[in-house]
Length: 256
Image (cartoon, rainbow, N blue to C red; front, side, top):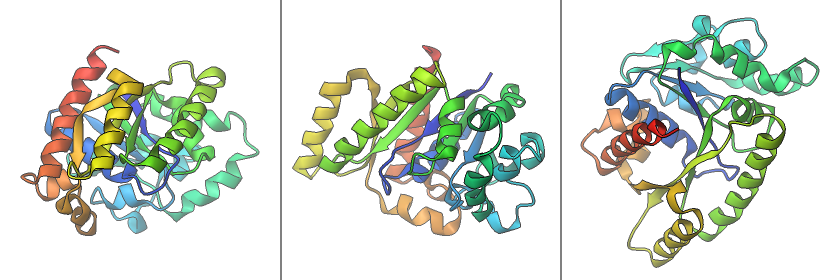
């Protein structure tokens, strides 16, 4: 049965999509069967996985509205080695259309359950706001991976996210927990980043992943080629860090 993880942070620009696609590619590289679910109407994780969102006949939007199954809507990214349940601008309309329907926050959970035996991991790229889309992701996940930069405002955003996860855990999904905090875009030369990193380890202890993702130009360039950095330049420091993170994830879920 697949382990389902949301990559979430209510603060924008922290590398959620970069984390999702590179972790998916890293997991595929170490022999895991992966489905990447794009829940952001911008469709960046879809494009960053080598899939053209404009040419998709079926997307996660159709799955949420129950007009298609995951089996029908998923596509294979041959270059990246994992399956993609893509998104495009249509998904923005799902917010409004889901307001009136029954079990609206459980639509994704029910859909993914049908293909749970096909995968080892399902990774969900959530939008930065706490919307009905994010709620669908949190309701079906076993845990949340939180990418964050080591800077002051990131700590403030983390407090909001922890409160949200507690509420969803209490009311909608008893399995939900923070799996770990991933330090991204890390530059060890900046004293403040080192200080915030130490604070995180003090407060969250084993919840902080050992792997640190460095600030890396090749990771930043990769999306313009429609690929995760792990596939675009496997020898780069950023790509190697994500493969190490994938290995750490595999180890961590053995204890779940």
